[in-house]
Length: 405
Image (cartoon, rainbow, N blue to C red; front, side, top):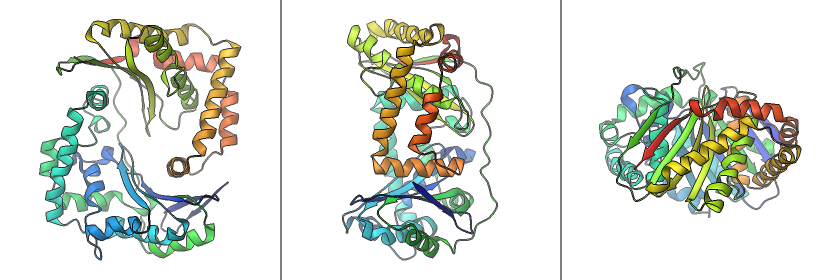
């Protein structure tokens, strides 16, 4: 059962009380790389690094030690549309975590010396991706699909972008985007909700809110693209994909179910059974669906020997096509529903994932569906809806293709 509260400045709180010995809490901000201006490429992710480098009352060492000194962990991530700082700790240290979040979000000073030092760290991170074609290809695919759009830009930025970032730009991005009404404090742990609210009020209630809202430009009309890049890799890497539903579309659940059936994390996905188990052509083949606020992305990825590239690609396309030319039978439909419900239930037992999930949901939808409500929605998905969604998203003529050779 989730409990929610909204401060007078617009900051939201969501909490699930559990009896576990560990607690999980995060501050999720509705601001990511997509909210950068043209001359700010990579700044959202860079801020995620330098925000730990010093505040009005703490140096970097004291920030990094604040949770670790009591056995906890502090972490952060940046996506196209979100930035999150989160921690795991013992329930007795809730106030310590919340005070630290407020300090680094609203009182970071971004020392010039630390900025210059961290540029080298981020550039190393950028270069490390160049040595991982199986990861880099996803960023290049988004740039291909969303060509010229802010949402298509690499979250890390380029080496040139990062070297050119200035403290003034950092302060301006934080001022524009780190606003209470664009934030959620999400918590899963053994603490009374009234106490949690009291502490959030203590450390965040004095921050002034305003009416500034997220303003994002919807991507232009999608046109399928094909591109090959000579990377000199031992394996060939390939992504096939299409734009998909945004996270408010009613069809997103049906698409998630289909993507899981096609190439989800289970070893029994159709792509894995066909390409890996039956033909032995690829070690890794997977499908994914990522929804955004006004668009989404469906992808199929595989890596294989150069001689097997076209065969793997045709097998992927055949499996995709089969899902909209052949309706699922009753047994297949029942199987995918049972598998989806099982995965949802098991995922809910991971409290850190739950904390991040309910926080994002409350940030986006102003509510969170319970596991029971989601399972009911899964049961309501019918064969005709799945086939309609497959035809819209998996149609071969709508797919873009990116190949690393």
